[in-house]
Every structure is written in structure tokens, then in C-alpha cells.
Amino acid sequence: MKILAIDTTTSLLSVAAGDRNSFSISELYGGLRHAENLPSVVEKVCSNMGLVLQDFSLLGVCLGPGSFTGLRIGLAFIKGLSASLSVPFIGINSLDVYASACSYIDLPVLSVVDARKKRFYAALYMSGERISDYLDADRDVLCSLIEPYKRVFLTGPDAGILKYRWFEGDDRFILLSSVVMGPGVSLINMTESVYKSHGAAPANTEPFYLRLSEAEIGITRSKTIS
Image (cartoon, rainbow, N blue to C red; front, side):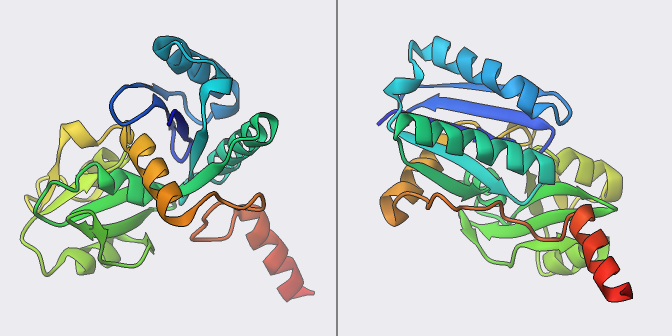
């Protein structure tokens, strides 16, 4: 089964193509210009594998939490491909994907995405299994979350931001250089496993948000005032 999967959750654009045994991965830091960069990055990984879009039998996309704009771009792109190619797609949680790359670690893993406004989207995992809620967390919440543990491994493209913004010099938070980049082959592996266990995503699949967008906050405030 040939799979094409993408992550536009953060400023790091990640695209993976192939299967569990043979794959190509491309990752590009481009701010949030994913709409501009995504087609060429997809073309690159396809070329590396000697594949064309018609060769894929399954598509995957990270649904969030993450950048509101990035999530909409990625989901719209995959939905468009799914419809044009008549190929099923899967939506996967970005925090789950980042944590899955660390499932071999026999210690708690904190998967994070920078949520701006001095907050992080986060979830805690043990041996690949999530053991907390998905959180929109400030520093105090994260400290409470990891309080029972002597050490916690950080993962995700924004793990370095978290470490050096709030916990530089704190030995409880361990930053692994091998897992602070994008999800890589975990995109392919999780897309396949979710498809086998749950089937294809419905056409009306929406991004996974942990907070309202600025536009939604504005609408809510307007309704409250009126």
C-alpha cells in the first residue's frame, strides 16, 4: 500500500511518501507558507520514490492541534487529492504522531506544539499510549502534568521552543535532537494503522482545534455585547 501523508500543523512542513519499508521524506521550514510550498514538496517526494499521484492508495493528514491556517491548508489539499484520485484519506492527531516516534522510550514523553500566547498544545504519553488529555496549556499546567515524574522526554517540531523558553537548565525536560524535527515515517505508519483500525475518514472531516480562532473569538464577543 503506497501512502502519501502530510503535516502542516506547525511552521515545519512535512511530507512522506511510500510504505513502511520504503519511503521518502521531505521537511521544510517555511513559516506558514504551506499553500505555496506544499505542491512542490509533494512532487519532490514522489519523484524520489519514482511515483505519481495515481500510485497512492491511501492519503493521510495531521488534523491538529496547531496553526489554524496550516491545518485548513493541509486538510483542503488532502481532501482535494482524495476526491480527484478517488482514494480514501485518514485524519490523524499531530500530537499522537509526534509521540509515536518515541514509543520505544520507556519514560514519559511530552508531545508539544507552540500554541502562541505563551501556551502550548500538549499531551503526555507512555510507551506510545496517551495518558493525559489533549491540553492547551500554560507553564503552570505543564509543570503540574509532569510533577509525578523525575524526567520527561520532549518531542515535536516545537519541543526546542518549549525547552528554551520555559525550561532551559531544568534537567527534568530532556530534548532529543533525533525527535524534535517532523514526524517523518511516523506519518506513514500511523496513517496505515488508523486506516486499518477505523477505516477512511468521512468527507466532512474537520481540523482538530483546542481553542477558538481569533475570528471566532471576535464573533463570540460581538454576540455577547449585543
